Image (cartoon, rainbow, N blue to C red):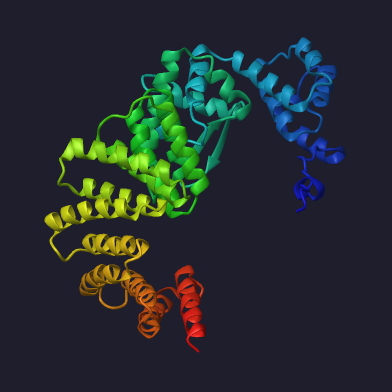
Length: 437
């Protein structure tokens, strides 16, 4: 408001409260290895290093458990330093005290940025016999965090994860990322589509050269984001994927991805870029399937929509007519996609300033949709609304009101009064009635 940052002005962060007094003493009594440490002066230094921070105190307790004898030089190094630095340093010290095999399991597990089940760990630790016991030990040492949902899940503490994964060789990192992609492919659509796993899958695929996996999942993710109206996220992800791939393969998944991204660009009003995507998709689809295929019709139809939105209705009609010809040849005259193409042709003629020609196409589309769906369907309502607008342009407001009233009644019955479609048609209807009073 007025250029002011209200978040900065009015909101304050709340830190994790450190234990003091009786709470601190109770916490210390729960820390088995610090509480019974044989040298009182070192025990006191451990308590001071913990500063009442429960996570830091637990990390120090794990250090004592792992090393038995505490390095006094380490305690000197952490004195007066920031708590996060101290915790990271202690966790690294704990990790170094363990076997090489244990450290490898930790590094491999660090490929996952999200909590992962033991199935996922097994995939990334393939060939290692001791991975399960290492995971359990990692939990005991506070190096791995453990949660519980339907199954137990694990993740390396963020203070260690990025650093220790980066210590692996390039080949090891690549192998781990490929294993992570395999794991996410198995779970991303379990119990309904889960986009959080899709984002991770795509990132790993792009970083290990699995471009086809990234493109394939990218198409599905973009479709999900578009349906959820998350256009900002969809644009960012689409550009992210394309920026990491130098050359798209000439296959169905590339065509589908380009088509999905083009639809998102169209929805946000970037029609020129949408056309570029649709043209690339059409080129690939034609190359794969030939000129008479549904994917080709899809791309032609979307090109028509983009050109119509850009204001070139003549060019739009050319593409729509090609799409309609293919659709009729494959489906026959009575099919929902044929009705959609007829409706789109009507819109293009309407934009071109020929409402009479538009009405011809709208009436054909309405007849097919009514035959397929019956009289109470959103597509039927849309075509009735379009007919009403076209008749209004011809100067027949009475006929226009009749059609738009029918469209409103259907939308209201299906969606209710508060749905955007219902509200939009109601506004049009009220406006026409006001003009004809």
